[in-house]
Image 1 (cartoon, rainbow, N blue to C red):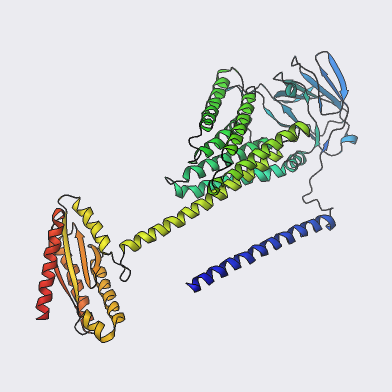
Image 2 (image 1 turned 60 degrees about the horizontal axis):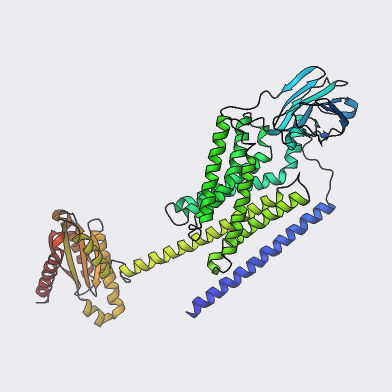
Length: 556
C-alpha cells in the first residue's frame, strides 16, 4: 500500500514538473517570436507577387439626376434604387503594373465598361430554384493592357431599398489577378485560420463520437461537432475565399444563409442533449422556433415572397432570443453543484463574447465587427469539447472498472475459470430454455491432500491450476469450464453430441496420464451425465454421484 501511494506521489510530482517545463517552453517561444519581429529582417517578400493598390482617384458618382465627385468608398442616398454609375479615367503612369480591378458589391448587379466597350456583366439576379438575389461578393474583372487614357465605368444596380445596399459605393482596387487574390487572403488570414480550426475540430469530434453511438454522450459530441462545422463553414463563406474558386455562386450564397440560420439552432440542440437542460421549456421553444424559421424562410424564397436576404432580420431577432435564453440558463444554475457547472463556463464565454461584440459594433467599429464573437465561439467549442472528452474518458474508466469487477465476481481468482456464481448464472440461463440438450461433467482431483501435506499448499495450488489448464484445453470448443470450489470442477456443454464430447474426455485423460508420471497419486475422477436443460439439477447430481463412485473405487 505504501509503495502504491509513493508511486502515485511520484507520478503527480513528475506531471507537475512536466507542466512547468511546457509553460517555460511556451514563454521562451513567445519571447523568441517577439525578438525576431523586433530585430529580424523585414525586406523578405516571399514569392515575388506584384503589389495591388486601392484606387485613390476622384470618381464621378452619378445616380438618378444626382452627381458627385468623391473618393471611394462612400454612402449615398438612393431610396429609388437608381443605377449607380462610377467613372474615372485610367492612366498607366498613375496605376503602374496591373491589368485588373477588384470591387465588392452588396446585393447589386454590376456592369463594367472600358470607354463604351462592355467587359463584364453580372447578369440577372439568381432566382432559381428559389429567390436568392445577386448576393454580396468580390468581383474581379480583367481589363487587359490597352487601358491607358480610357474611361472606366462601373454600373451598380442595387436590388433592395436598405441603405447598406442601395447607397453603397465600394472601394476599387487595381493590380494583377494573383496580387488581388493575395490581398483578399491577407485581409482574412486570421479568420481563415479560425475557420479551418473550427471545421477540423468539428470533424475530429465527429470521429471521436462515432465509437460512442448509442451511448450517453454520443448526441452531445454529434451536435457540438455539427455546430462547430456549421459555424466554420459560415465563417469560410464570409471570408469570401470560396468566391475565387467556386463558379456556382448561388450555392455559396445559399450556404451562407443556411449556415447562419442554423448556428443558433444547433447550439440550442447541443444544450438540449444534456439531461439537466432537456426539460427547459424555453430551450425547447427556441429549438422548435429556429427549425420553423428556417423552413419558412426557404418556403418564402421558393415561392418568391421574399429572399433570404430580406428575411435576415428575423434571424437576428432569433439570435438575440437565443442569447437571452443563454443568460436565463446561466442565472438558473447559480446554485448548481460543482459537477453540474462544467458546461456553464463555456456558455458564459459565449454570452460574454456576444455582448462584447454587440458593444463593439455599436460603439467602436461597425465595419470590422465579428472578431470577438468568433473567438468566443472557438473558446466555447474548445471548452465544451474538452469537458465532453474528460467525461467520456471518466465513463470509459468507470466501464472498465465495472467490467473488471464483474469479471472478478464471476471468475475464480486462482484458475481464471468461471466460479460458482458463474455456474449458477449459466444454469439459470439454460433452465429458462426448453429442450436444449446438455452434458455435464463433474471432476474432482485425486492426491491434492497428499501434495499439500508433502510439499505445501503452494505446490497444491499449482496442481489445481494445472488441472484447470487441462480442462480448459480439452473442452474449450465444446463447453464452459468452472471451478466450483476446492478441487472440484465442472464442464457444461450445450447442444453438443455425446460422441464429440467424448473426444474432449479422451484428450483430458491423455493429459492427466502425462501429469501422473510426475506427480505421485495425482489423477482426476469424473462423472458424466446428459439430458435436457429443464432437468439440469438432476443431471448435475447424476454426474456428481458418478464422480464420487469412481473416486471411492480408486481409494479401495
